[in-house]
Length: 328
Image (cartoon, rainbow, N blue to C red; front, side, top):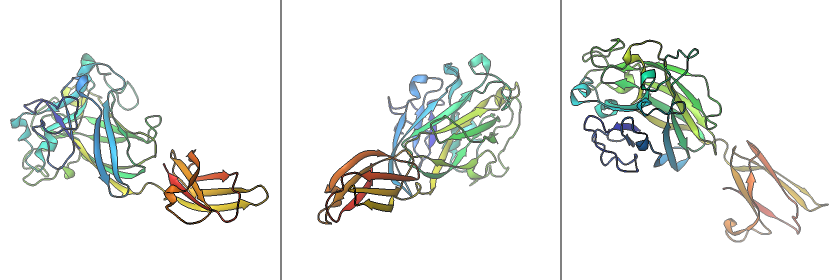
């Protein structure tokens, strides 16, 4: 994902569709696009993507940026830098690093001011993902400014839609233009990796972390600047973009692990490996003829019991009987 801004001649986002890269002048090739207008809440819309993952295959995923604990438009950042500023990065993928999405924590702009991770009030920026398949993932997230930003920040991950979060990951933005207030954490031209063919992956600000997405639950990433000082360039957080890959499949594959028949009352109990949040259809037939997808449905919408689910067919009359269980 590459976050694109309308600033610095970056183009006006396609109306109603921030995922469309058609007008994103500074979009990095090979990445999906999110294109927005700086400090314009009407442009920060849900964006839907058709993607394919290595373990779970095709999926439709919707990503929505949110600023949940302030309503000030000035907090909602979509920064794009000028050609001269962009030129301060000498390495590869200059359009990835040229613009970013994030938040402004300054109280004068509607932010919540200084927060050190414990004291004060954070100015949160969220990315909410709906439809992410249940699986384990590795994310590589880029936090670099081709101007002066050099804020420390936190990243927290929630696999239950934002109800609970894991331990925070602490990072620090890098920058590649001399100066700033304060002037810190600079990676200037000629300094590795800010050299010809230098890779953003090698910046100290780039964060690589893992998480697990749960079936039927939104995955939420929560970011906040650790705005402990008064210098303007330590009061923002900026996310250039990210790369997300699956490192494991979506839990146990569906497999019937137990079957028991009570001949006295004509009941059959089925147990299978399942996934949290899913629902299941159970079908039966007295012979193996025909396509199992056309067998008689004895139950649909049966809720998962977690890693293991049991269903009892209470009218399993007759002789031999066969069953299939399908995840809906």
